[in-house]
Image (cartoon, rainbow, N blue to C red):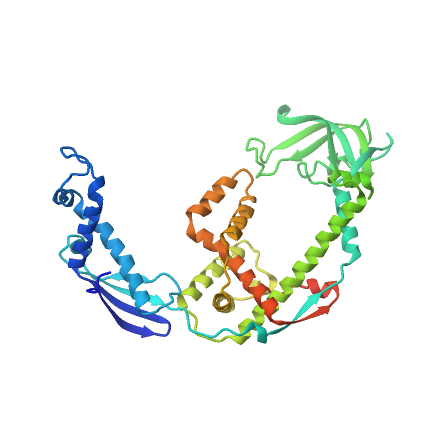
Length: 450
């Protein structure tokens, strides 16, 4: 920008600074001329050869529109210069308050005058990670965890075998049935099936249907009377009583899946030993992840204790607003935890504002520590995170990737957790670490993670 621009600090309070900025109308006029000159070779108007439209004619035809672009560009550049000249590290987007008449500015008859208020990142010295000490909790893998996981896999592969003709169906049995549903004596679309296997107690049919089949035997014929729920997806059936003429073909009992090579092949493994090896690795990884989660919480707690500095009010308010919106949403849905449900809004607001302050403080500390250690998140890491996010939306992967490519703020939201984890890794590497083996219950006990 031209050195004729005037930047003057008019207010300084805490981490907030307000500047008065004036850009002379002559400077705007020069920028306009430069813009028109830059455009001239590309302008094509009837009656003129391409690229030969006189600048005076372009100014007459498009001057007002071009000047609006010039003012916006000058506003952005001058506000950035004010920040750079005063060596400010902004904690967010500056607030711009135009003081000049906008129409007069774009007409070229008035200077561009505005006030800019910006919050600064506080100056502080982060703790040296080499001076920190932590105890890392670990636990021996419980063989029961692996056995339970394998049993769950087997449960999911459960099969059924035919029972004796005189056997009465009980809960958890399966029945093979034919049925036809009628409302007011008329069969309805989708209400009939043949040879359908229904597990009693699975809750997959209309409420009350499965209960009425308990005690039935092979070859039994019975009418099952049910009411479709009021919110049933098919509006023509919602809230109506239906009678299902049902024939039981056979009653089937559970057949436990064996923990053997046959089970393993259903999951793509050649042997049961290989399946067990993979499941064991999964459980081990869960233990490791939980150990890191505990350690990270301890690190964040320690960083919070070690730092005390003023926080940018705008950052705290933005963080609190996000948290509070989630709290209100959970409250309306009746999902607040037991302790929070007992508190008044005033008490909740006080508690969650403290959480917002903690998050902002820790975010600033981690950012400063990362900057000092020259921590960076590379494009390849971002690309991997983007792909991982896209995979959560099967069939829409390309749209998700394009969304991130076109939205810098979305990319920033991907980068933030990656950066945080890398700084935590740095602290783990530099700090004095003592490993302590504890019982599984101690490792997995819940913390109030914030």
